[in-house]
Image (cartoon, rainbow, N blue to C red; front, side, top):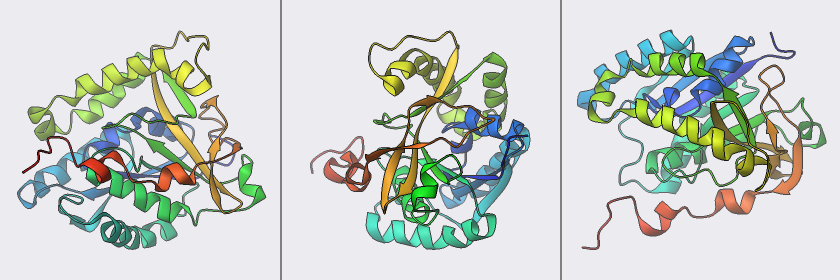
Length: 276
């Protein structure tokens, strides 16, 4: 068990994101004694809800995560809704959950993840994460952290990489296979494998700087590590994530201007948008 292992809460916009966003990282923490709680915010359309609830329950059983679904779940986070009010409403719904679980690490999609539902969950995580801690003590490894992942848009500021092997990928894909209805529509197993292999090649340069040496690990996940210090969000220092000591030190770079800026979706609409 990791020294100081505690609770990590993953905010999944939809049932299946627990197996796509940062599943290898969550499983690595689980293996080091962390209690991993996946909170599903939406079960999609009402006619899908029963199926998707059953699928996420089975996926979390296979992954050995605890599974919570918002009660009642959101319909489909945010189709057509205004971002500000929707973010505040979701943060209000999630706040009691986080008070009860008291996570040391909160994991969520980026607020710039292109998919409107993902962005709203990411912004709610920022709102909630602002209360995780602030002050010089939280700059060190004892502080609390917010980890962001990217799926529908590239993560522009990755600071941590987790390398993993084929057996971990197999475990992720086995859990993802529980989402049979979603995989019938689009086989996200191809995405999970391809992205993990791409991150192993690009990750060292994206995290540590262009020109950095490559790595022999076959697969990797990338995260943006954030923490609070001096009333601002600070980036974590670039590192390979060690699940035995997962909470990293913060640097001096404040990134509130990026986190709070309008996303591409805010400015130009979702994919497939056409002038009418």
